Length: 99
Image (cartoon, rainbow, N blue to C red):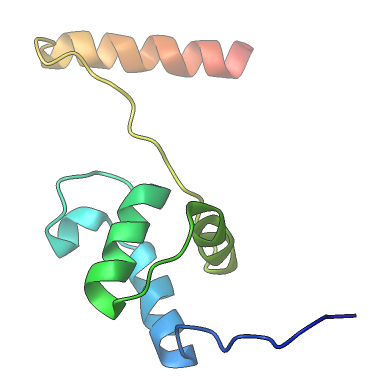
């Protein structure tokens, strides 16, 4: 049972569909300098695109509804060359599989 009035959603169905479609592509396609969608990046996108501000908790709910999980970019040493990066990713992948 809900108490009190319920505020209308800030995004309409068309905007939610557009939002979901955008999240299924990389943020770089929209000019962001990030490889993955984080809650902070989605928050910035919603403000810029729709002039709507949600808490990061609510953004996680919207992302879940859109079928996307928030991600965090993994740090990578700036000095690493391609071979070092490949070895790093192999090590991380092996430890993830065996762990």
